[in-house]
Image (cartoon, rainbow over all chains, first blue to last red):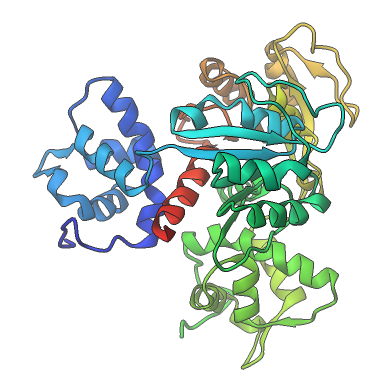
Amino acid sequence: MVKSSRKTKIPEPTIERLPLYSRPLEELMEADVPVVSSETLAKLCGVNPAQVRKDLAYFGEFGVRGVGYEVANLLKEINRILATDRQWKLCIVGLGNLGSALFENQNFKRRGYIFAAAFDSDPAKVGRILPNGVVVKHPKMIEVVVPKLEIEIGVITTPPFEAQRVAEMLFSAGVRAILNFAPIQLRSPECCIVENVDFTVNLENLAYHLAKLH
Amino acid sequence: MVKSSRKTKIPEPTIERLPLYSRPLEELMEADVPVVSSETLAKLCGVNPAQVRKDLAYFGEFGVRGVGYEVANLLKEINRILATDRQWKLCIVGLGNLGSALFENQNFKRRGYIFAAAFDSDPAKVGRILPNGVVVKHPKMIEVVVPKLEIEIGVITTPPFEAQRVAEMLFSAGVRAILNFAPIQLRSPECCIVENVDFTVNLENLAYHLAKLH
């Protein structure tokens, strides 16, 4: 058993699994379930129970010995660690099908990620008013809009050949992190973070497991 | 140093990182780079070099001692393990913005994931001919089309309240794996696999790292 205290440094892989735990915990809380066992939580997340116990050992004080974890307190602590107890301002660049889908994603807003600006280089789209009242602007306005609205995170959904240039515009305007959906690996300056999202990685995981099943 | 041979069982977390390595390896191969060091590969993938060395120790025979890894052979072996050396037939259910974006994703096709069918319950969309010649059908046709075309993987991009029902239709028609983009955790029968994709998890990772930087 890992000794646990609030001051223990939580390892990176555990941190990366925390959002997985927070989803079912939210559902349990909505259903007024006060305590959950590691077996149930594991099943709800699709993680093995030993992993759940190991990860949540870092939150030992919320474990009720032999019973499980206090749902409300565990969720609160996870949200504090993941910094989801505050709002983040985002902008999106590229309003094709994917960009529009992300912009309209209700989960983002519910979790505190607010799209405060949207950019597209298509003249037919510039000036359009989006459902939340944001007006689409040309990417040349990034350097003005990002610092003015104090936007911290940029989401890129442009064609691949535009993505690196857009990333550099965002960084020099003050964005500190980018979530990139363009099918290209973006490079970032030392001070900043890029997370590249590639759906084919999910498909390859599925295909690998399917190939094993056959 | 982990002793390596082709027969060593490769652990799950390593398997899950393999797609990350294959992307930069493809770029290196296109650029005619024959050998890559673990440091360079680590930098290109955003993984730490010790992790790369540990993972690729399972592919020891492609390591050139003190120099690096043979790009072409390493890539070939990764693709064999991930079963990307074959094609997979997919169908998609839900042709909103996200569904359309995924259907048109050129990377899927390039990696052997072929959308062979598309379903949407909107009468205005049924009968529409998509760019690759696929005709949009009503979801009630799933039970006929999936077995006929031998579709193995389903992609769900419906509203959340329809997703579980659609998943059950897909499974009973013979689909073995589902990639789910609807914001709801889907349950699956024992024989089948569901991977739930949630972009807010990526945002939470970014926010966590940003909060640490400040």
